[in-house]
Length: 149
Image (cartoon, rainbow, N blue to C red; front, side):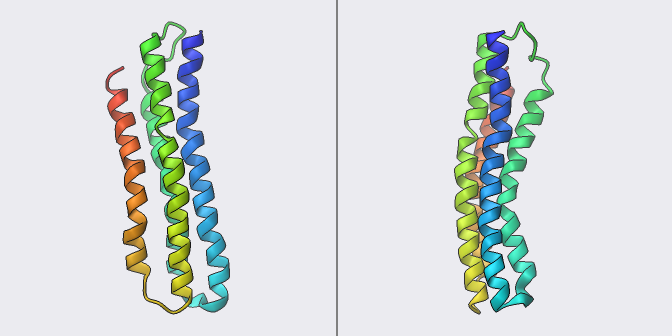
């Protein structure tokens, strides 16, 4: 039973950690959008895309959750190895939490610059993709772990 609890804790971490990071990152971008709308309301489309970008990290966590949950190892007879693997895969997503928050900050800076009249939307998108890479790596690692249990 303890092994099952460890495995379900790992599943919960796959949703909780990137979800928290995404919520914070999107909030950071959205807060910047509110201020930017006062200066340049015509750029709302750019603001909205940059604000929403941090939400993708939560999707990676959900995708990993779905992959693991679809496996049939979640029974009271789960092995210590499998339980630890699921927990470790969930713990990996602390990377996504940090990446989502930092991506939100990058996007907020881009939003502020667009509001100031600078044409930096494309450059901001490029720079904002860099933290995204680490969430993708966390998802890839979780996927590889799922194939070993």
